[in-house]
Image 1 (cartoon, rainbow, N blue to C red):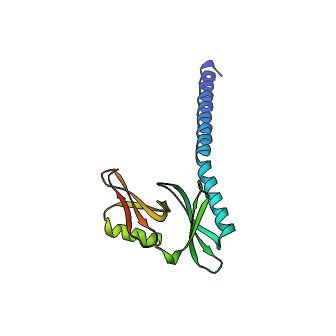
Image 2 (image 1 turned 45 degrees about the horizontal axis):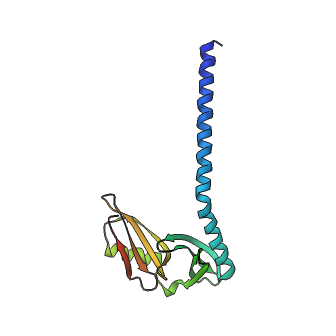
Image 3 (image 1 turned 60 degrees about the horizontal axis):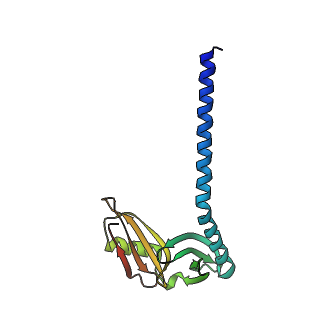
Length: 164
């Protein structure tokens, strides 16, 4: 092998090694950044499964408005649907039968009726000023964001913030 080939292989090896090190560092940063979120989901699920009639978790939510809350949707052995909201800072938890409030689908339908023309709205269940709420977030065509909070029990609009 001539010296140019050896030098090219050495440079290629160094570049590949540096890229691999950068990739590894990014994976570690991503893992560290997402670990607290996955831990709180696991904690919320564990509490709900141990302390409530919920036996199967079907969906998890997270909301951080006036207070951080982790929520889930679940089913009991008898097939009843429940919503569970956990406030990790105060260690308080709330359980609601689904038929005593509005569902995610109902809230998204209400949002689309009242605020048409928004692309891909997302819905989260959580806690706001002492009550359970559904938060719908959206991105407008002009690139701005907005959100609407709806009362879980009756589906009435609580807060509307647009063009953020």
